[in-house]
Length: 183
Image 1 (cartoon, rainbow, N blue to C red):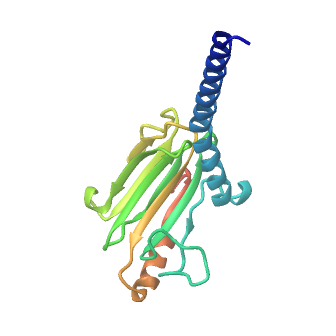
Image 2 (image 1 turned 180 degrees about the vertical axis):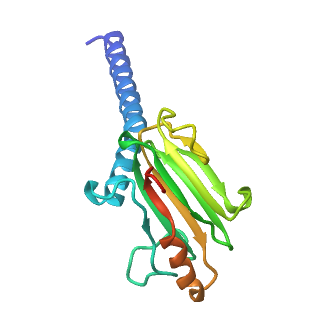
C-alpha cells in the first residue's frame, strides 16, 4: 500500500478516534452528575419513601469503624426533594455556633447557599419550588429550583459532645416537607 494511502488511513483513524473520545467525554460530562445525584437522592429518600423529608446526623465526632464524614464537627440535616409533588417548606431555628443551608440541583450544581450571619433573625423559613408555583400570600423566602429534584443540606457546627442534646432538639424542631396548613 502506498505511503500516501497509509497516511490518509492513519489520519481518518485519528479523526474517528478523536471524535469518539469527544463524544464519550461529552456523554460523561452530561450524564454522570445526574447519575451520581440520582444515587444520592435514592439513598437519602430510602428508595422513594422519604422524598421531601429531612434526615439528621444523630452522632457527634468521628465514627470509629464507620463511614468518614467530611467534617465530624458538623451535625447535618439532609433532604432529597421532588418538586413534581409540589413545593416544600424548610423551617426552624438556626444554630448559634454556625448554621448554613445549601441547595443542589439534579446535576450536582450548588445553586443556593445561606448561613446564619446572612439572616436577620435566628429562625429560617424557606419554600423551595419549581416554576414559581408558590402562593404569593406565603410570607417567607421563596427559592426557585432550576430542576424538579435536588438535595438540601443544612450544616451546624458543634463545638463539643456536650452540645449534642441541644443540637438534636434543634434538629427535631425543624419542619421539612410539603406545604400544609400550619406548616
